[in-house]
Length: 71
Image (cartoon, rainbow, N blue to C red; front, side, top):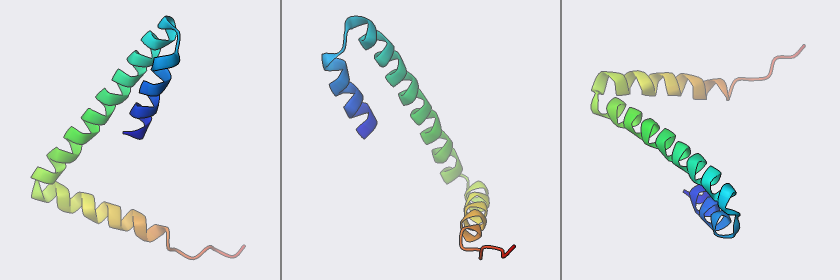
C-alpha cells in the first residue's frame, strides 16, 4: 500500500509521459497483488490446501534456524 501511495505522490509532480508509464506500472502491480490475494483466498477456503501450505511454510521456516555447518 505504501508503494502505491508513494507512486501517487510522484505522479503528481511527474511529466505527462511519465504519468502514463507510472499509471500502467501501478495498474500492473495492483493486478499482481489482486492475483496473489485471490490465490491466498482459494487456499484459505480449502482445508486440505491450507494444511499443506502451513506444513510447507513451517518446514521452510524451520530451515532458517538450522545451525551453520563448519567447513
